[in-house]
Image (cartoon, rainbow, N blue to C red; front, side, top):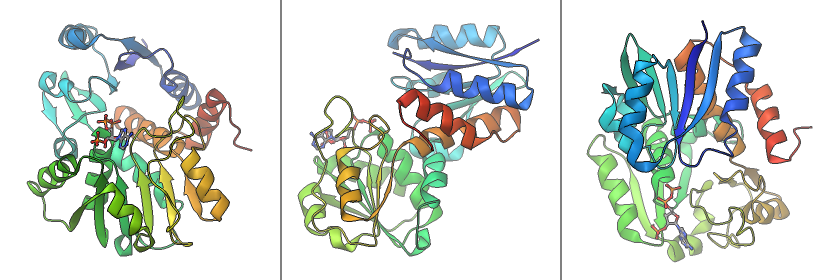
Length: 282
Ligand code: ATR
């Protein structure tokens, strides 16, 4: 019998996860089927109860359920607790365990672009929303030389810093966006976690990169468009850029590994995602 997997989100119509995971099941000869479940915000508990009844094997969780789902699970892994959100659920003998593969997935992808060790890097994270939490937690857990969070609303950056420090010591700085922009030459890695530049507002940038250093890596979590205005400007300067496709693929691949114990082919996954996004991997 096919094992059932799925995505809980709202809306889920444009999700690339079903194609990506169903292809990986086929490639690896696993009898699995992945379905995108469109679950309105106030129906999450009913959805989780129903999926338990149907013995769901694993789930991805996306907006708007990443925080609320935590109430309905039996156990939550330490890094997901630190992030304060769950994007992956594994059914282990009837117990639903929550994980968060966003930050780790992001790091796996970022590491392929780095020209010096992460632990020696001075990192700037732009934004202090849900996406920033995952990235900050993964970076701080792995260890960087200095981690700075810059946000328009400084209190939200402080919140992330203080939340993280409840769990572990870390060297985390907080700055207003304008100050970070002026200090940009200090950073080895600059990461945009905000939605600024996402379709349809493709002409916007979260920060001016006039002062970025030539050896910096400029990263944007956005994958729609594949190359944001921010990354276009970085490419024009000739610096290394990194888009959000890798994070999407790697967070999915890590979830797949947790569900099945098998490593999917991330190159094939990337091809599928790029085709969906209208880009090319060639
Ligand atoms: P997500 O969960 O995807 O991270 P979010 O929680 O809504 O989304 O967070 C959005 C982030 O983008 C926030 O850091 C937000 O800044 P504020 O905390 O000041 O709201 C940032 N952001 C969104 N639009 C922005 C804009 N026009 N200028 C500056 N920052 C913006």
